[in-house]
Length: 361
Image (cartoon, rainbow, N blue to C red):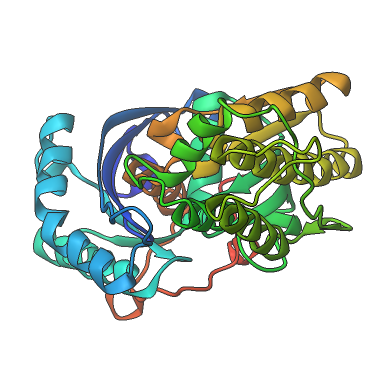
């Protein structure tokens, strides 16, 4: 049956671009000729995380092995939670990129296998677009400036003429990568996530704001120099030589507080500049770092000063998940887009603005 004629459309989405393996099932209902009548319902959203020891990151080969080991169990749980059988699924969606090569490949192969086993169309999805569309669906933000912040990406985005246009981005490492790597320097636990543990530690700091490089360059920003400097300060603290401007020793909590305040101020600045450029009063924060309450608080203060508002989701949808891939993939599938099996590759580099967003006017 022609998908555009169906009033109920269901997709299964598979995500595995980093250390989160996620499988989700989403339901779209309504007449596609009348977009205002269409609704989205999350039927299941199952996730399993590869956690490496404190002081270490997650290597591609180890992460890929985790995804291969857990995929069947996670996919079965997603179908069970949704109360569906495979024949009720309309399409299989998977993360085509960007991300880490080995984990991406593992999940792409798994999604391709499901499509062949169940005789379903396959839809490759841009990871970043998945975050944006899920954020819009959950929050109801209509025309926001999007701040996309994660372990692998830092971008300020706005929609125009069927593309998500990148107004500013990191010039080197992502803000989440900066936080994760600093967590390794302090040997902070990676469970549930290093960025979350830095956030909790930062709440205990604040006695002193340590001077760190502030690197905003037009609409872009840089985090590598900040990371180098804060790692130096951490080494001095461990050696018993770290003192703040008041002459008193600073703590790991002070370092976490100072790092957050500096990098988040940079993100607020470039986001505000994009809001002024496009004339938007809405900010939508997506990606794993978007869960950070301090970032939401700082962004909210800026938006309030402009008479605007901030939209954000909780960890179910901020952190990488399968349901965002299902949702974005189904939106594309409803416009007639499919990924032929012979073209169902994945790529570590897949820019947000490469995607033609046919489902938006």
